[in-house]
Image (cartoon, rainbow over all chains, first blue to last red; front, side, top):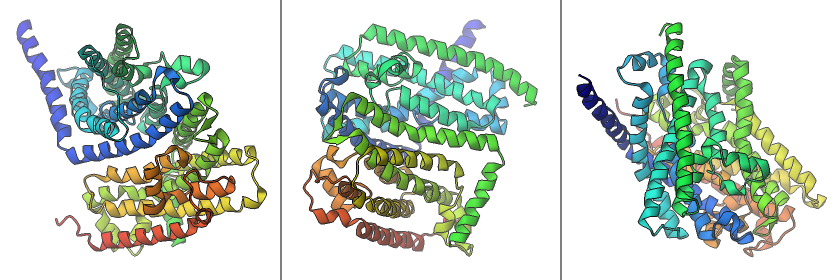
Length: 270
Length: 262
């Protein structure tokens, strides 16, 4: 009986990953439009970094090409990691009450959402991630890792970053159950995520105690860590361990919140 | 026209005021979101004293002038961005049969009074820059002129973006590259950008007149790209040309609009 259940559970989540991918593949034009806008902003941001690196060559241990690459790779992360939003349907479902249906399903809400989100991230990595990189390569020229090991490290770090990003967004989404209005907490998350992840500027540039703090907070595991793995500027094992630590902490918090929301929903009467 | 807009905007404001705590939180958070751009400027200048020949306070002056115009338009006009949603939902048809200009209705659609926080933030930065820089008082008359021109240019851009969405119903985000992209572009001295890009946003799409060209006059500086002195004063002309173009595009879009057909 136990073996039978295991056989059906694993394909369930695998199928959900595929459905998440296909669901977003329907809106290819919208995704390409997003890629276009991300690319334009990439060019504008790249000029700021170029001017800064001309004034201070070698800042943060990067050369100019690496700084430009940093800019475009962070633009490429916006879609897959949903850096500007929550990217989950949970807040709407909490407000409409549909969440009660999700909670009675014989599958964990967290794993269910994670599987769909991984499918979405995989699709947006291709459609919204590659165009900014290609444009950056065409306009300015970008750094490409030569060693296969570096690519492997980057892809692993990217996957870990998506996990951390999902775990954080899941917590933000569930908080709606207690706060009832998602806009406030979403803006709050937007500020934390864009500022503290390295999305706006490399975290090495942040001065003083503020810089030291943001470099160890979970948001650094989303953008700064995988980018440094791509650029070959960080020790691979330490960086992956840092990301894994935050992924585990945030996913565990999400699991606890999922248990709490069960009680909360019952109290509200569905 | 102004009265109609004020009435529509006031309706949405009263709706937002029904939840005072939420209203206060959104205003403060809007301020924080807008403040991130200033944070980036401050962090950049924590690492260097000049960026492409411009100091921190000069950059904050450029940021303040452009962003004040941008945030005013973001509050009062940017709601036009939702036109593609109205086209898809069929609600644009309802607007067309009402006895008020559809442009006005769309600009006031779901008006967000909490954006006032951003306007205040831009005004504070501009106020700081004006007091920190030792500017020639004889040139300060240009500051209100450039902000007025900026407002016209951003309004025209959002109108153009709305008109484009008649064609790009499924890809409205493309237009953000022009509206929000211009907001980003004008935060920094144009001397950091490539020569071709600056040529493009001077002679093709006259975005350099939002703040760059007139600011060179206020700051009493030569253009690193060597444009002649008289171009500092072409802001109103550029704004007018762009506004006419936007009006034309908007009318064309509206004229060729054919509902969803169902």
